[in-house]
Image (cartoon, rainbow, N blue to C red):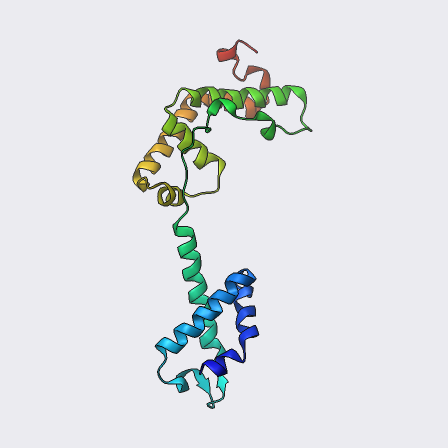
Length: 193
């Protein structure tokens, strides 16, 4: 059976690459498929047509399942580090500011971002780091929970609280920004600076 499977090696590799896999990983998955087939299939006639041709659909399904298992295992071990250099005071505002906006709007936006940074600077370090991970990355709450070892319920409640705090304290500024009243943003906190 292994000899018959091996005749189509390049087809199996192309199948796995077609699923979105890199070449070196695809080769490994195909090799694992050979071992799995050898170990689990006692009667090779179950995966053969006319005792000569391998059932390509059966092999495709096996490879697809193995690739999905690989992706699950790979994503299972994402780790988020709580580092000392995650300092909210070192946020770079330049990455948020577009070059093609007028000065008043740009200043209003800077004031809006500064208001958010000022608000977050009063939060405990854990909350700042968790909020930055949630708001600045594409990770879901479940991904953050799996990567950090913090319960999903705890992360959900924390993020819900962050949203409520920011909404409560900065809704007026946000409405001013949407209305184009950029000169009013942060005025009550920063005296128009």
